[in-house]
Every structure is written in structure tokens, then in C-alpha cells.
Length: 564
Image 1 (cartoon, rainbow, N blue to C red):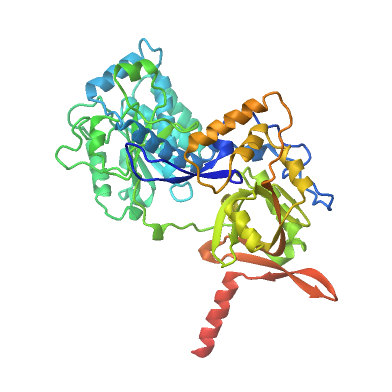
Image 2 (tube, helix red, strand yellow; image 1 turned 180 degrees about the vertical axis):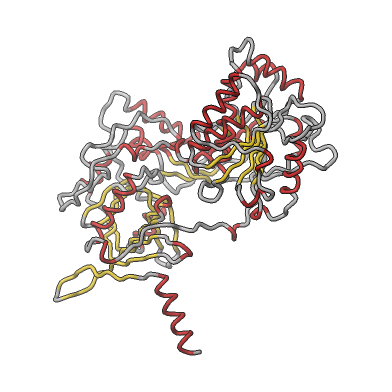
């Protein structure tokens, strides 16, 4: 929550002479009691003022989606966790020699009590999870899993099952089936899901035409010697694919633990092997992974117990949340200009929306809550000072009624200073998963003191203390000053007595003059409906205007044709 933040100036220390200014979001960074459950009467807290309320829906459990369930959050946290871990220790991730990898497997399946099928299940799930992290389902649906006769092939079979359940369409090429119950059972599981097994001779000549991803699960770290038929030919086909410079014109190649044909320690010795786009190392990266130059390197197999970590002095990155994989190495470079989404959404038409923009907002907000979006009440607040210099930040909507949108903050913050000079602002709600955004413009005023008082005492006690301690947008010597002040207040009010609301903290209400509802569409031909206030018969009413960008293009095309 960004409505209780403080800026801090770090003092110079022995390692650095540079001062830094950082923001502290108190509810996240300082300990606080468990917040009470949300009130049972609404999904969005409404303004406690006596004004008429909008009929807001009851809360839905879908809205309580955890951060760990959000793949975008997991990707971001994985990157942050690895960076933080590496910078804190100064060590790089441990890479194992072949002998060490074999010894760890023996100990896992010996004194440490794991079975081979347990490890195979965790490994295959890790591979599938890594694929999902990078390759979007809508663009990379068709997957070919090439399995070898050993444990690496078993990992591939498990990955195929999980990918099927994740919505992908896997096919399996398993030339040399292992006649053991474990492997037979895995094949039976796949067959029960109608996952096709494709013989080598039936594979298409051009794999790019029928597959978006190829998972190489042929050989693992225990493989020795030269690949024999038919695996030698399969590896050569992957070599031909990886030689295509334009990755958009060929399937992505994902290798499980070791790129097949590589030496487990020395990598692609003669330079004639294929270059996978993704490597999913298991347990810990093997030495050959240092030679991997592809854009995506993940670690999977979240099962390494402390005795193994201690004995082999393993330095491994932490796994974020409930994720079964974590990115290691540098994140791939990205051509920002190539990042784009082709939105697929229902049309936003004038005859389908509510005549009152407040009712339309509540409808969309309700749908965002029902969809389980994380913090659907998060909004960008843009203010400007008396010279027109704008600034934006994210805050949380804490109330809405026919009079406007309410949020709370420190009256000494930059946004409060801006609003004292220029009482006009804009809000932006962005619901990415639904291809929607809502803009609201209007004038701003403080809510009545009793309204701020009532909301303040509805907050968790930890958040109340944070609001007192955090002098937003002021310079302080360091974070420890905030922590110490917080602890002193925590002790002062440890008897459960009422915590007084500080005078410098309270709410604002934006009274809308304009709403704009935006729905993303294909080929950038988005829909926009704008509500603005008009005077009609001596009364003020909301007027709806449509601005469908496809219609604008049609108009432009017509103008061009008329001039030809």
C-alpha cells in the first residue's frame, strides 16, 4: 500500500560514499498484527459518509488470490530473489561435476529416503513450470517431447503430463521404451490423456511446421559415449533447427538438465552440438551449464535437503513463493520495441453499458474482483503542482459512492502538496488480465475529519502505527530510524488502548467530471467510451461518446479514397 510511504536518505558508509533516497512502504516492511477479515457487506469499502451508496457486491473468495499464484509476480520475484541472493553473498550458483551429481542422487535415493519416482515427478513438474514461465500458451501450444531410455526420459514423460494439464498440446517421441513398471506407468498415464506417441519415422520432415516447442529429454548427466540411432539423427535435427538465426521461424528448444550430446562437464566440446533456447538444470547446474549461452536458464527440482547443501557446500538461489523453478543467470536482453500483445476481448458498445458511469465502474470492478485479479482497487493517481508539473504514484481506492472516489494518505506528502496548489487530479485503473482500463478526471477535496477518523480506526493496528511513524516525502537518516520509532509506539500502545489518528493523515475524494472506459481489441483497434457532464434542460447529465479506433481508421481511409 503506497499511501503510507516515507523517503529516507542513507548515510555514507565504508563501502559507499553515495547517499541514496528510498521509499519505505510501512505496512510491508514493518511487522504488524494480522489484519482483520474484510467486512461482510461489500467487496470494496465504501465511503462512511451518509451520502447515497452504490449497491456493491459481496466479497468473493476469488479476490483473495495470493501473490504466489500470479505467474507474473512469480517471475518478478524470482529475478529479485536471485539478484538479492547473489549480491548479498557475492557467490555464484554452484555447478556440479558428474561425480558429485551422481553421489547426490545416490544419497537422495538412499539414506535421505527419496524414491526415483518422487524425484522424477518433481523434476518433470519443474520442467513444465519453467516452460510455462517463458512460453505463453497462446503462442506456443504444440510441444514435442523427445524422451531417452533413462531417468532424463522419465522426466520428459512427467513434463508432458503436466503440460497437458496446463493447457498445452504435447506429443511424445519415445523410441526406446524402458521395460520397467515406473516407465510403463508413465506411458499409461499419458495414453489415458490421449497424448499421442509419435514414432521417429512418423515425425514430420520439417519440425517447425507442427511444433512450437521441442523438449530435449534424451540424455542426462550419467550418459557416456556417442549417441546411437535413432538419437544421433534426432540430435542432428535439433542442430539444424538451432542453426536458424530467426528464432521466430523455428520451435524453441528446451533441454532437461543437459543438452543431449554435450559433455556433462565440458559442454559442446567440438562445437557441433545444438544450442538450446532454454536449459532447465535439476538439483543444481552441472559444469556444462557454464557454456550455455541461451536466453533462459532455470533451476528446478525443489527437493535439495540441508544435509546435501551442507556436505557439498551448495549455493543455490531461493525459490520464490510456491514456484517449482527459478531463473538463474542473466535475464535475456529484450527488444522493447517488439513487446506487444494482440488483445482479444468482447466489444465495448454504447448500448451495452450503464447510463451512469458510477454504475458502469462498479460493474467492471465487480468483474475484476470475480476474476480474482490482484488488488483490483489499485489505481494510479496523477497530480500536478501550481506550475503544472505532474507526478504519479500508485494508491489504493478505499471508498466509492455517487460523490466520488476516496483514498487516504499523509497530508505532508508530495501528492497532498500538489493538491493544495492545484485541486485537480486523474485516476487510472488498469486491469491487465481483462484488457481493460478506466480513467477518471475531476476535482479533489479532503474528506470530513470524522470520515478519516472512522477509516483510520478500521485499519490494522500495525498500519495505524505506520501512519504515525511515516512522515511521507521527508528525508530521514535511515530505515533504522523508522523501525525504532515504530517499536517505541508499538510498546506504548501494547495495552490495546486507542491509537489516535495523527492530524497529518486523512482522506481525499475525487469528484469526477469525466470517465473513460477502455477495452483492448485486436490489431490496436481498441474501444473507448467517454462519459462527460453536459447541461441539458437546466440539469447536468452524463453524456456518452464512443471513440472506436477502428472507426477512426475507416474515416481516414474514406478521406484518402475521396482524394484519389
